Image (cartoon, rainbow, N blue to C red; front, side, top):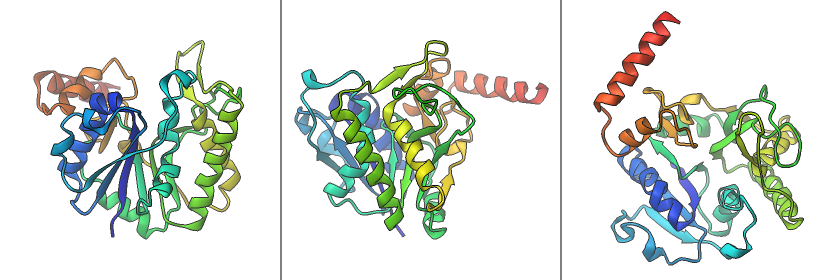
Length: 268
């Protein structure tokens, strides 16, 4: 029972982050799992770092994207938002697991994904319905989902769900409306695709077999026991992410931080 991991990025962001995502998948997830990277860029694939050194299960697919001078502010976030359309257009085998390019897989997640498949889950991602944060469309739904990890099963309702999300997104983009919003108090950045994902969830929740994934599969706080770390612009502990990503899981800084957090939990 297999699945396909997909991500979407331009060449520059892939060279900065995505290459580590792919390396971590190759190191920790079964060889039967295929990896598809959608490159939304005019630059040639040859500009991808170590392009010729990836294994046969890694497939780079160039997809159409607007020229840089035609992009509205925040349009780079829409690369990821269109992963479903890219997968369908390029006949990528479902089920698929979308991961943001700035994620890093720390443990084999195959058993968890197979559980989702066996349980006939249609769609899975992290849900935060108690969060109220303004998004680009002026609703308070800007942070109710974290879309860095999205599982999409090969079911008719899952396909209908993502067709709805992408259709609404395309209509919105055509109207040249704001794509991103930064909260004036917290400074948190939200993108319009997060709002549309949540609104579609509200519309389909009675039809979907949905799973709210545990934090360990999309963790931006970098807990040691987590299966997937999500860089997500977290600066306080970014050194920890970078050190483990670059192959130093037992660095002195990492051990000190782990001891500190353990003591904090013990006394708190």
